[in-house]
Length: 454
Ligand code: 2HG
Ligand code: ZN
Image (cartoon, rainbow, N blue to C red; front, side, top):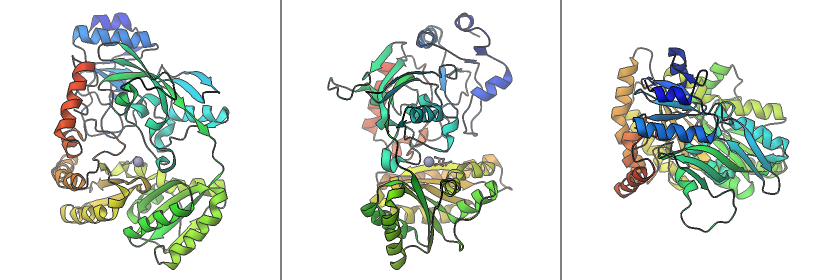
């Protein structure tokens, strides 16, 4: 137990009781042991710097912790690490209207940022089901994506400036919120998606955009996966889409049962797509829908008639992950180029059927971005260890399919502990060599989120 740690933080800003260690020592991943030695709650950048310096001096290891909604074990402390919670660094520091920028501490909850932007007459477009709990620092550290990437891109697109404490305790001020800055390497982008392995994000300047006009939602039913992609291209030629999501019949069954929701269409279908667009584009969207029916791509569809109906259609997609949690799912978060999607899906489907004949496999995801979530559900009579072991054994075959199409083994959930041993399926040995070299420069003593990613 480090006495110097107690000099830096006194209760309640340091916790060592079992309940606190269990809460702050993990994220939503449930497959790793949770064993931190302490949780600390810094309130200033200087405290984070002092903590990192202390960690270097005393050989402590630090795990950053935001809203703990991660799905890859990126914020799990399994080996006596000190968890650094950003819960108390949760202030919005500035709003600069002329710059369209909000400056936030890392612990600001995503939804708080969204709501604040709306109150100023602007829009922060990155959104996902866990926005009510996840924190901005974690969003940036994992380059979070979500449901509107097709229109607005990932978190990376919205970060104009970053303050980061590196693994040596230095504070870097990256890009200062500038629009234009051609002064060499842009470190901002190195830290975005680095999962806290190079430094801890302490503040960010977040870019905003105009509030979109009211949205409408359409849910379509399909018999063949390939037809979903035909419909995507056809709609995109006529309508600016804000979202194009998909889910399988099994996913729909799970979410309607879990949340007691109505099914969207009178008849069942193999697959469903949820589309969102500006209400002013509804006429074009209806024309696109009629064309899709004539072509035989779509079996049926529904168009929201009110904001409340749009919100309840969204629940069918946004509630899926939560509805699967009771089945201890083994998660995959894959992406390929959209043009590769139909063949990739056929390959994955064939492999999954052959390898998991006795497991339920739930397909859903952000198909408009080429991102597929594949959740394999644990049968009741199989132990969790055996289930994970069997899924894990098959992962190399699955990732071989990803590699063959130059895709990603983690499109938006990060690598963390869960996908670390498979990183070479998406990153070359030259890439990995440079990643390790960067780690050595920015965190030479390995104090920042050890064991994650690399
Ligand atoms: C989603 O798109 C989230 O719903 C969670 O990224 C996906 O739980 C999952 O696999
Ligand atoms: Zn997702």
